[in-house]
Length: 114
Image (cartoon, rainbow, N blue to C red; front, side, top):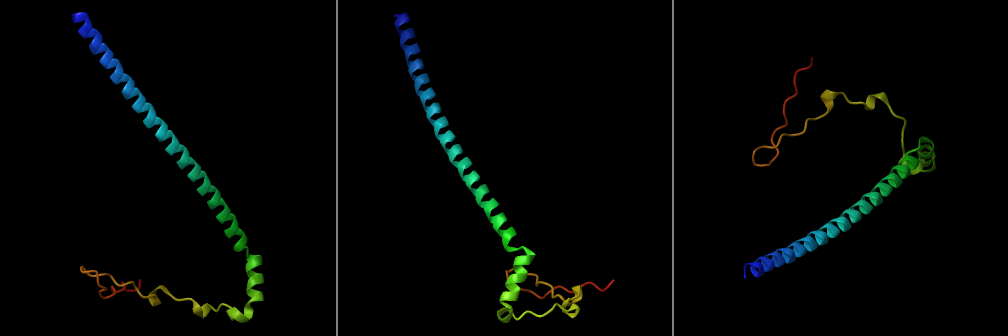
């Protein structure tokens, strides 16, 4: 009788072990599939990023920009840069500090010139 109970307990433990092993295998397969999809997405994003960097490099070449400026000179109406167009730090307004309620408060005072 004791032998039959022991066999039943061991058979039950074996069935539970098989079920747990199957569940773990299934979860591992799902994780591996998700990992493969993520790696494919990362590779696709890296390729897109490299393509965008190459396109940006092409679009910002000085010779190309000069040709565009000359071609559309009437539209842009660009003038030569003047040194008087440069502002000093004191001429740039400070950003207002928000008050506690989220509204705009008075802009902070600048420190005295050094």
